[in-house]
Image 1: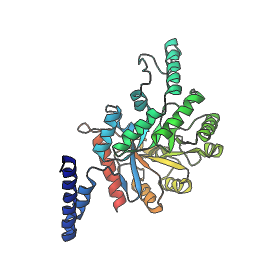
Image 2 (image 1 turned 135 degrees about the vertical axis):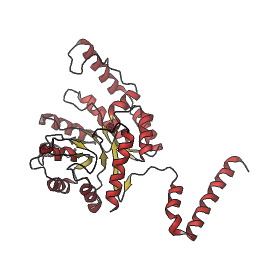
Image 3 (image 1 turned 180 degrees about the horizontal axis):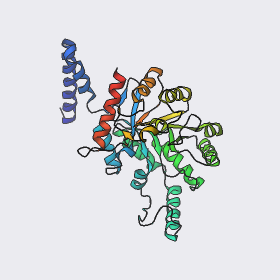
Image 4 (image 1 turned 90 degrees about the vertical axis):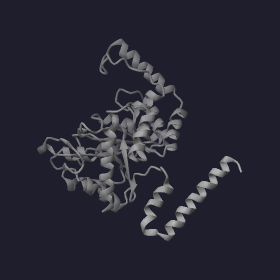
Length: 328
């Protein structure tokens, strides 16, 4: 018998042995058996609710692709919103001289922008499909993509590139801040429809029940990336109950959420470890579970990381909080 067949036979007998023991002692060993049979399969979907993470949460740590994959593995997270910069750098995007400010009108900055546009409009989407495969092979699904290529000053070709890159990565939508200029959300909506890819708009302090109205009416491909923490931090009419009502009313247009625990204006808009602020994190997660909304909930780590910890450890805490909230 060759080594490959011998190895397969040993694995089969091992699993049969575990299953047989479980039948004899179901109460004491069933949970351990399930864990053993799963081996190292990542799973952050609890009771039908997909908990993910936006890779921005790991910004205090190295951002190369292999590191991002390892962070997800360490956290046991199987789904992400992927920031664009690390992927573009991995695929060879021209590097900017950091001594040149982003808003510079210098010849050097103009030349850099031309080089980036040329790179984005010429790169093969096969490269992004390879990235998708790399993450998928490690048990991680990319459900959203946040590239820095959807601004007003980006060309139509760059925006089309961003939409197609997101699609090639396996994402259902790209995310971007709500434009101040409604003409730009109209432009994005038209390009999104042309490329059959949703654009989900993210709000900060401008979050309100009507912040997305104009964009939603402009295109069926304009959608919502709801940051629950920012919604509460905006204060005013943005109460906990108003947030829950907004989710119910707009559940079909919310492509994904950012979950963080923030306080309202009265408490300085500070970020807190989950459970210590005013954002109804537990109620939000229970609502997703009860209504069976298929909306990924992205952990977004923004509170200050304790000195004896790091981003991975804090994301783990957030994930454990979510799991416990959904278990009760």
